[in-house]
Length: 186
Image (cartoon, rainbow, N blue to C red; front, side, top):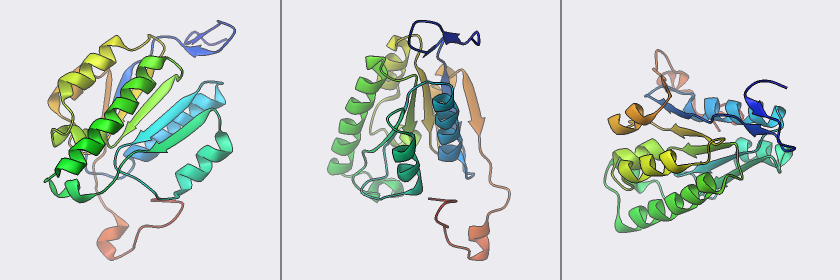
């Protein structure tokens, strides 16, 4: 058995870390999903909590259904209005509710990987405080790996993380008028 998997009768990740995928380039959510798929292949459990997406049947949701119950994806967003940088009271309330669910998932110890998809945007707009998130990360069970995705990761989050990857857009088909493609971008 690999050194990083505990032999406890139930496979558990030994020494979960904090990862951040940020930047203006494509691939942050995709990288986090790849980590989840890899974890499921190793017999671990993963959950992705999406802070922005809501009510859309995406290809990643269909994949999670196939990999369930070891991979769950929950869409917790309610609108995209705050992406313009002006969150409404409803946006903030929705983000706070999503954070409460995320904090519960992290603290429960039920998952080996918890992905907080697009939380960096929520943190950058101060809809949830960095101090609150960092406190939860510090108190999490030792086997829980947490991945925070989204543009604009605040410096406090970057400092608290064990691994930070910045996606940088060099070239994108959108610039040539190619729209988002099912199975690739969603």
